[in-house]
Length: 548
Image 1 (cartoon, rainbow, N blue to C red):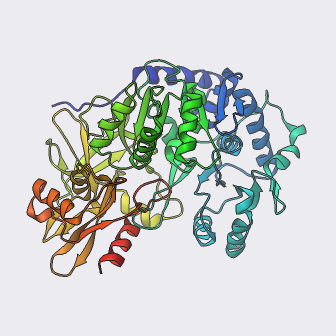
Image 2 (image 1 turned 90 degrees about the vertical axis):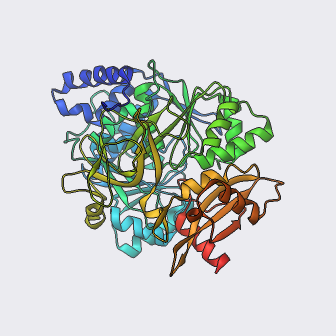
Image 3 (image 1 turned 30 degrees about the vertical axis):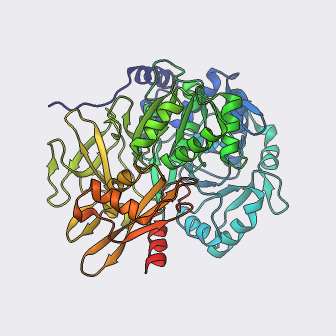
């Protein structure tokens, strides 16, 4: 049977026409992948378009304003001696100033590392030691922590505060020093090879260990441009996007890249993103598009039900970042009846959504995008699996290829095959219609007496209990048996759950080798990473502390 892939002719044709205009001017074919030149052109095409709105204050900014400010910042970078191949760090909430150095860096081929703004000194030290940033942009309350980390490493990094700080220069002060030198009309981005020039350094989620920085080039990201709006039937594909994730999320960075190109407005906020604030923004701005993790969506749905919120404004809701429970999709299709609910699959190392689903069966992460090469591989023999309904590790090749983890050749060697395939570490299978299904991270698979157990399978069963709000499965080590599964359960408000109920449900649905021999723990909340994935290492620590 011929492979079936996902392709959107509307987006592909639009991007082809758009980048052709750039190439006709520069006479450089590779500029179709130069993100700086692409974004600069999009700003110039429609200067009055409202690019972003601060959902907490109502402030807004047009393409024309961002064009001027980002060129001002790029000119500053040049005057400070920054060049293609250098790195900067962004650690900030989603205010309107945050994209200014982001776009400026893309014009010049400077790599951008967006990191968690709540990292402590030791975590900043670990991160800065890898990235070696020339400039670190942060909020005033983090300046002293950043200064300490930089001093420990003896780095010559310039520190710039987005807001006013007595300890360092602010962004506005830095830009004002160079305001007389701005020439918007004649500004030229740097020329460089998009295939080899890093655009983004994406921090991996670190669910099982220390995070790494995935290197994504301009070519990686530009070639993946169609994936963020794969649902498009027209341009613009949607009116407005509500951003409720932190800056370091790949989806947030992708929308920073492509919202001006596809002409949809970003609604974002630097205020604390409580469910009340998110629901307030939904009610006020009526966004049409949203991307959330399953965990965040579950919390928002529960709050929305209590507040009797109206989700009818949404046309498209993307779910991703971890396995999507079938029950969540079903609830969402009731609460947001006008929205197409899209489940997808991607990884930081891919720089995109690799699989996409609108019409696939519930539980599937969809079909692969046509611009990607992919295969399933038997983890025991290394042979390619070509038959449906057989589990294998997903291997992927994207345009330009994965360039590895920044300054970490050892980790890079572990995930790249000799012939350049990125080995995802994810177990999947496909059905006869080429819909793919996520099984489990190979590192997270449990083994009880040599029988493999998927935590996701156990979690899906336990979520069927009406008294369960959420659940994550970990294990206790056993010298004789291997892994003893443990269910960490969050009960719904008012539910009187017992360990016996949960164990009996699993006994009813699954075979003897998949039983909860490690026990059941009831928690008020699950430990999460900054990207709202379950923090599996901390979960195991909780289980060990409670049950041993």
